[in-house]
Image (cartoon, rainbow, N blue to C red; front, side):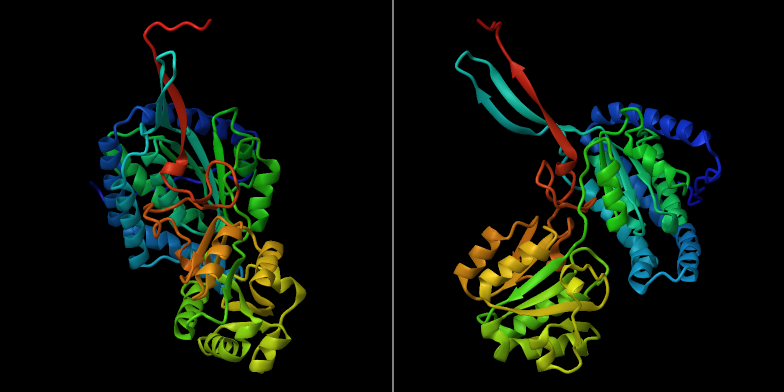
Length: 435
């Protein structure tokens, strides 16, 4: 396989009437590819993904060159450091993209699974069987790895994918998609199984939200609040989405202090720009004398800005006052809001008021408190004595994820291959008729 990769030529931004025609054609091709993929055996999908992963490895130089151009533009535009971290690739991250594709290729084929089987009194055998969704539209912003994760997950679940990258990552995403397409084609899979919209024009997003004349079955946004809110407001098709990752860690007086320090630092600072990063630390009032000062000190000395209430500021003068909107804010940076609360009930009330139903954790040695927290916090992911940065499809054994869904229908939490399937009922009879 050649390592040369040709990235898609961008459609002119003033293409006008040509853009709707282009997008409809993309939708028609995706629908045709989805029909073929729905009948493709798992081993053939697996071979295509392995070939795509190898093509990404071989295209490393091209991908990094395109990423350097995207990064230069983002820096010139004054983008913050957390944004640049999400956008930036290096040889290790390119290798990680390829490895994620290979991991997805190694997952069991989710299509055709018998989810339930039962027999009716009249002798009818009824099965509920997993099927592909069809065509998945993914709109994302600054993370170029979404190109590979979303494309590979959709394909393994038997779906065609239409990807629309943000302007800031357009060149990088195009290079990754071109490499993957080369690998998929070499393995004999439909060439339109993975299509990256070849334009930065924002109108392409609107056309996708309209469903492309029925071609798109579901939309998944990956990005900031403005993108997700637009998708949820305008989409004419179902949406798997979350808004902010306003993630809380609650520490009570029974929590082992050394463990709590390790978990809080990891939850906040391992990677500050991901949606599982902790944004608020709640400390029980009866833990103020034992836990609050060490935790605040550890965060500040690790380079994290602490924005605290009066109690948090009292234990360390380096803490800054928290603004009212800091309690419901996704910083995506080395900043955390710290508040003392009057026990578990107050912590639950705070999370219910300010949280985003994404991920929340409790650090405690009290099993009763832990079970209450896990039962009562209405978030897609809840943890006991573990870092919130485990809110990741790879850490769940899903291989990767398209996103963390915080809704209550169908998919919730990490959206992996199983969540990218629907189902149908198969009935087998022996001539039964209904009276």
